[in-house]
Length: 236
Image 1 (spheres, rainbow, N blue to C red):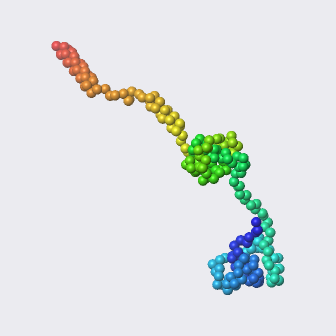
Image 2 (image 1 turned 30 degrees about the vertical axis):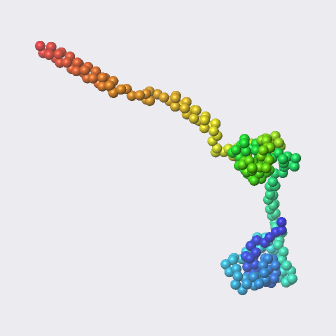
Image 3 (image 1 turned 120 degrees about the vertical axis):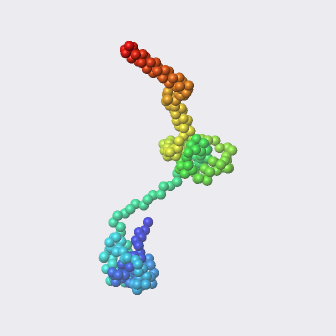
């Protein structure tokens, strides 16, 4: 990948203000038109742009500028970068051997049936297919739907068990499974049975309460009469 000048117009502004380079030299270095450089020098263009010093960012050397100032035919060259940043490698799509490509629809059908939580992008990563093919198999509009048989992609050698487990784990995060819901309901029912106590028993009938009050009142009356009789006997 060829090195490119950073902020060409801002660099042109700095070169116009700080060097005696010709418009053609600056235009060639900054990939601009000579008339555009002339407009910058006349103040008709790039008035709001602050000049960028190419010496500070290491894209030009002082020797290179001086050489170009002495020779109008010399064309400025970018300085070699001091630090080379490796290019990011694009991840190539998963390659599937020709002998196994016919098995991909069967593997997709197996994944769709056994792991409905998987998204199309995840299935695509596992078996190296397109979202369009996955959608056709989901909707049973695939040209070979009648002959497809669900087959484990790990057994077919289309992906590893580790890759499959990782994708299933990612898809399952935050999803409550039906068996977990049933287990929770069963445990809740058992706890409700164990927590049944006397406070949940039905209240005693009002008649029993009235009878108890009458018995207490009768007992108090009897005690008062006994005390009165004893006082009279003492006086006599």
